[in-house]
Image (tube, rainbow, N blue to C red; front, top):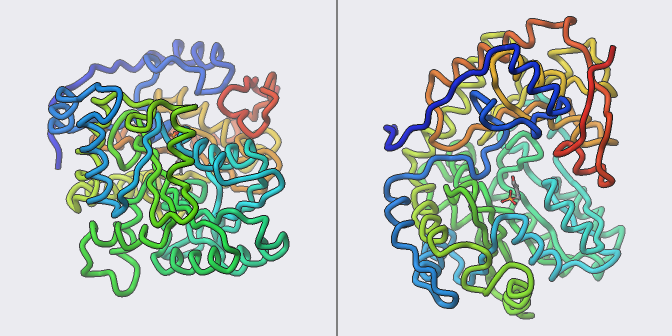
Length: 447
Ligand SMILES: Cc1ncc(COP(=O)(O)O)c(C=O)c1O
C-alpha cells in the first residue's frame, strides 16, 4: 500500500474541449497536450511516482563529471539487484540500445528475438541488421491460456539462425516481460534454453530486462520450482545466463529517466567498446547522459522494485483493471500481463475494417468519452503485420488509485458501447519511417 507524499490537481476538460483537442491533434493522442488528459495510460515508461526515499537520494545527487558517488551507488545497486558488475549508463533505454546494437551488429546480420520492441527493432535495423521475431505460436491468441506466452520459440529461433549461419547471428535477444506480446512473462527455463541457442551459433545472449522485477513476480507465481524462491534471487537467476542486460530505468528502475547496459563475462571486451561508444553518443561512461541525481534516484528505485509488497500492489492493479473492464464487456487479452491491460479492439469494434484502424478508433473514443489516453498497438502502429488490434492501457507505477481505475473502466466501457456509431480513421500524413508512424502520423475519420 502507498499513501501520497505529493499530489497534482487534474481537471477533466468538458466534452466539447476534448472533441476539439482530438481534432487539433490529428486524431493521434500523442499530439494531445497532457493538460487535456484526465488519466494518462499512454505508457508505463518514466511516468510513475518516486518514493520519498528516492527524492531524498535525488537531493544528494553528485554531479561530478567523472567517477561521481551517485554513479558508484548505481553500480552497487545493479550489482546487488541484477548480479552484474560492469555497467554503462545511458540517457534511457533506446540510448543503451544504440550503444549495444551499434557495437554488436554488422550489415546483413540477423538478430533473433522473442519479439523485438519497437526501439530495439529500429536500432538493430539502424546498425544494418535484420530483426527476426520468434514468439511462441499462441503469443497473439488473445484467449489462449499459458503461463509464459512471452517466451522465445526455441525451435523457430534455431531455424532462423541456422538459415543464415553462425557468423551472421551476433545476438539472441530475450525481452522480459515481452512488451510487444501483451506484457507476457518469460520463464527462467526459456532464458536458459535461449542461452543454449546462442551458444550453438556463437552469439551473445542479450536480455532486455527493463521489467526484470515484474517478470520475476510471474516466475514465482507460475514456474515450477520457484514458488518459494525470493524475488531478488529469481531476478538474479533469470538474468544470469545473459552476456549483457539492457535496461530502460523508466520501468523497473522506478525513475522518470535513465537507463544502462550491464555486461557479464566479457571475452572480447564488449564493455570497453560500449564505454567508448558512450563517450561518443551519451556522455562520459560514469554518467552516460544522466544527471547524478537521476542515477542516485535509480539506485534506490532498483532496490524498491524487488520488494514483493510493491510487486503485489503493482501487478494486482493491472489485474483489477482487467477485471473491471471485463465486467463492462470490454474484451481483454488473457492472461493479463505485467504492466498493462491490452484491449482487443478487433473484437470490440468488428464493424471497422483493419485498414480503418479499429484500435485507433477506440483510443480516440476513450479520450472523447472520459479523457483517458491509451495507445493503439495494432494495424496502425505495426503496418504490414497481422497482430491483433490491440489498445494498450499501461499503468504508471504507484501513480493511480482505485477510483482512477474505475473511471477508466467506465470510460472504455462507454466507448465500446457506442459500437457502430464509431467510425474508422484514415491516415492524412505520416513520416517516412512507417515503422514509427503511430508517434506522429495524423488521421481523420472516414465518412
Ligand atoms: C521492452 C522495451 N525495451 C526498450 C524500451 C525503450 O526504452 P526507453 O523508452 O527508455 O528508450 C522500452 C520502452 O518502452 C521497452 O518497453
